[in-house]
Amino acid sequence: MHNRQPFSIKIFSPNGDPDGLRVIERSNWVGNALVFPRSLMPQVKRRREFVENGVYILMGPGHDGRGQRLLIGEADPIAPKLESHFAEEDFWTQAVLFTSSGASMLSKAQLQFLESRLIELALSVKRVNLQNRVQPATPRLGESDRAEMEVFLSNMRQILPILGIDAFELPPRQQRRWSHRLTINQADITAYGSETSQGFVVFRSSKCVDQTSSSLYEQSRSVYDLRESLLDKGVLFRRDGVLHFTQDYSFECPTTAASVVLGEPVNGRAVWSAPDGRSLREVEESLAGAPVNVPEEESTPQHDNDSVSA
Image (cartoon, rainbow, N blue to C red; front, top):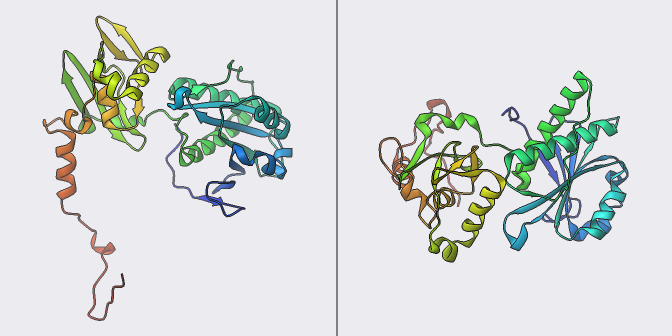
């Protein structure tokens, strides 16, 4: 997991379309990113970034429109590879390119290192389906070169969630403190979880009921399919009549997590419980009604001649 240090992002829209081409720069980084929808490929391929080398991620919806699919690659230069994917790969709808904005471009070995590490991370997190048919071996780099590329990768990973791509981030482990844990204790299973900035995380070694109800398939087909995919990917495995989580896993919300755990449609904010026995909903309601303590130095003094405009 990359360090949680403050940083700033600059997003530039050359065409004035927030959903079109975007150029992204991060503070104190020699790299930059280019993001664009597939439909703009014929126009944007004329940009200078396409004659440089770099790493790219192609994104599209999963099978049957559920989830997300990614294709990760590297190229020197980028243009011919992207033109080939434009002609031969139908699934992708968005592309992200990462290039170096410094005086020297990334070497072939550095590109291959970044590609291999991104694929390795996506396979370990197991949140998306990869279109890559093989996992390339990580090239051997010198100690300083490898450290430099890990920093470059960390900066890439800080940008990607801002673009809605969480395929490379394991749940934050600091959230595993008991004071933050929520539980489900039903039907001889116990699951542990917590709300985080990445969604609702169910922790490793939590248990799920083995069988799903017919209502899950009929009323929440996407959750049913997600549960099946977690079995296929090895996030869940069957033993002694129950399902076990093999790793921490981030869900979109408490309800999705709880429905996967219990195998039926439920309201997650009602069934996840805090250590004191209150439901997640009750905890949130109490927090919402709690007074906010503003430090004295941050409070804004009011004067008789102050005016407020709507």
